Image (tube, rainbow, N blue to C red):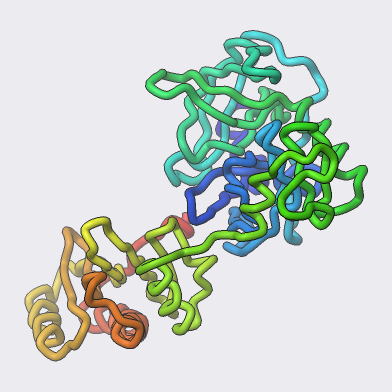
Length: 362
């Protein structure tokens, strides 16, 4: 099975995972989503999406820092060609196909070989592969040429080319079997005694079996806690009935939709807060009339401004963090939501502008 056919066959198993700290990959096996513990970021809840799965919140039901594995509850979804864990030993030189979302480039596949099938790092063996993997690939599957999962992309060596390491399938099988044998959710594996512990049995974040401090228990208990201007921005978004957990792209970036309008809000290190709505692409005719219309509207607007960047027509709201207040921010973003949803249609219908293509349309 070549890489193109393999990606097409199994793409519905590949999950994109987002947290305030970054994004990564995962895949469906045995009724759960498998990913890395470091992708789950010590949270009880992450945001997931897939080709046939709308962006939504999902619970992290198993966190194992020993193996750097996490399991996420799988919402109802129909997968025609489910992935299977391999049962055959991996050999040096075997085909290795890594699938994931490197740098947010969704559903990317790279092909290589297993350079070393049992590379020892600490107490664990890893598959060393030369298929290119990058940030965002973490947690995604490595497949053999039969389309079976032979490993989980876990880490790379910095400043090296095509030196990637994947947790072998047999560790995943052991963890899945141990987790399912407990018939419980919200399980943490102690990094010291390596026992599987139900979260409800943990008191004051200490392992009840060996007494070691479990930082992941504290992280899960506290969750993500924004502060300062970021907290104010999220308070404003919540007041506008935007689910901030789903909207977060990172700790300082959010994305949300109003009708047909898609908006991005970014808080830059310079202190500038910019909310942009990419409305449409430039028309090929009626350009002068459209310019006059946009300039007239800019004269009338409060808070908002039209701009053109290359081929794109953008409506923006900009504010400096030191000037941001709850009432002013709420008013500005509320006007942006309503105006963006209105003016994209006006520009398309009146001047022949075209709707931009978006990633989810492919």
